[in-house]
Structures are given as C-alpha cells and as structure tokens.
Length: 222
Image 1 (tube, helix red, strand yellow):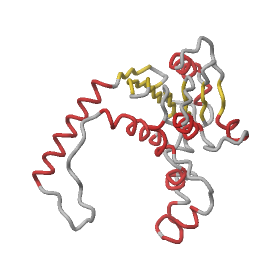
Image 2 (cartoon, rainbow, N blue to C red):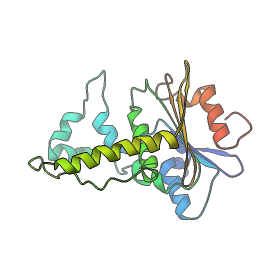
Image 3 (cartoon, rainbow, N blue to C red):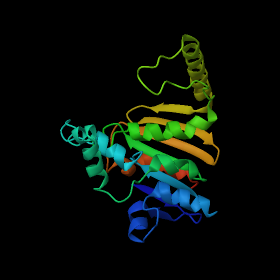
C-alpha cells in the first residue's frame, strides 16, 4: 500500500489510484510516471512495499512454509507463476524515477511481505551515492575471482560502509523501531522500520504518521 501526497497536501491512496485507472497501477510506478511527465507531487509514501511481484511469489509463505518456492525450481513452474499476473509491479525498477521526497515504512513482524523488500529498495536508492566497484564477479561457478580483484572488492565495501554511515542519519527509538534518513538526488528519503504493525497496520501507528507528515511538510495527522 502507498500514498501520493499532492502539492496541495491531499493524500491519494494507492488502491484509489488503481480504481481510477492509473496506468501505473501502484504508487511507486505512478510516482515515476508523474516524474517523466514533469509533475511533482509533494511526496510519495510506500507502506510495506515489495521489490516486485515476482519477488513476493518467491518469498511468500504460509506458516513458515514457502508454498510457491518449489515451483520456482522448474522453468514450467516459473512460466505458470508469471501467467498468474498481468503486471509485474516492478517497484525496484521504477523507484529511482521518483523525483520527490520518498517515505518508506515497514514492520519487522510483517508476515506477508518481509521487511527485507523495503531494505532492498533503500539500498537501491543509496547505491548511486556510494563508491562504485570496478570488480566484476564471475558469471559461472567454474570461474574463480582473482585474489587481487577480491582485495579490491573488500576495500570498496569498506569505503561503501563508511560513506553510508556518513550519508545516512539513523535514530533508534525504544519500543518503536529505527528511522533512517538521507538526502537523495530528488529530495529527502526516509525509511522507518517498526517493531510492530504487521502488514496492514504499519501506517496506522501514530509515530509513523508523525514522521510521514514531517517528511512531506504536513501540519496535521494523516
């Protein structure tokens, strides 16, 4: 679920956008579409998002058992799963196109979509601001990475961790969770990871709403 906050402070829910025929069908994609058309809303909020629908199918489980994962082993199984949906909902592919402040919230006890999806999205947004690696990993298991290349890779990872710690402002809030924030190329990026909230209620927490309102410059609760 997600919201797009208009310049007038109006908040448009993702399901409303879909029912009204938004061609992108999800807030992240709609935000990217608006960016390409030169439209700048006040911000985009993604609550418990996924990286892509195919990734959800890979990680989805019931009672700890990944019921769809065995189908991923076979080519015919992967084709079958892809035929079950008509849109990829490729959040990870469009999130860099968003040209306004971005707010992401996810709870650690989300049993439907693991919070690792949101952390991956955060990593994608951070990546352009971190030192790039010139090392290319072998494409097949029979190839071995040279020791010199491995040493370069380790050094670059150290530099990336150091650059990330300087760029990202992180606050741990007791009994609530953590808040990470950095200045992206298109505005502020805020990631909130709560302890509780599951999948449907993460956006109902007062603390989450307060941070969202502050991110988008709203002077009232959502």
